[in-house]
Image 1 (cartoon, one colour):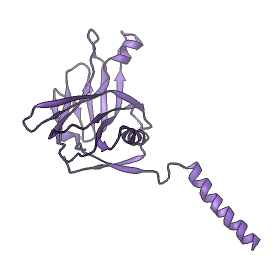
Image 2 (cartoon, one colour; image 1 turned 90 degrees about the horizontal axis):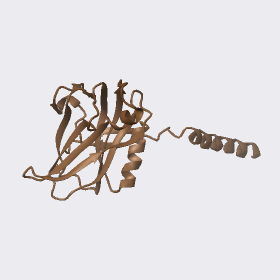
Image 3 (cartoon, rainbow, N blue to C red; image 1 turned 180 degrees about the vertical axis):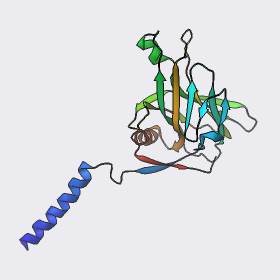
Image 4 (cartoon, one colour; image 1 turned 135 degrees about the vertical axis):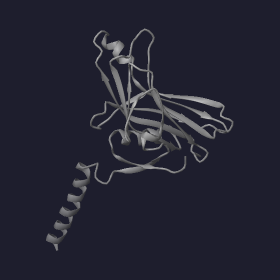
Length: 207
């Protein structure tokens, strides 16, 4: 009887230790993105390099990609825009401070009403460390939803600073997403999982 009890305790302890030292096991969650996952379906300005999964903007040119989505089914209080990004900066004539503040990837969007009038501008440039191979960071922005909006135009862009040339610095976006949630904190939690690649991103047809 004592031997059986001891064995049961060992088994239970083994399970506890297994889950304690491997927090990623079965930790994957999922959320829906309202952005098209195939980046070749996005509109382009200039001549960015586009594949089905990545967009690279060349700093020597003025270029970006954008897409319009239907937001009438987004009933949550907040939305978050995010993407994995990589900055390849070969400029040598600027200080590290100037290189850090120019040529960066950023997300830009605006809500439109049914007449195509812009209701509110959105710009996301917060950065979060990521575990994704080949990506420097996750760039993101969290915004409140807007009543009366019927669509949103989302851009993947590169920042510019007056008197600083972006020639020699390219930025690449991978897996841009638009997710919705009930609070900023909830979305920030989702984005942290996204940065750690601890989430399954699913395409939503509601766009």
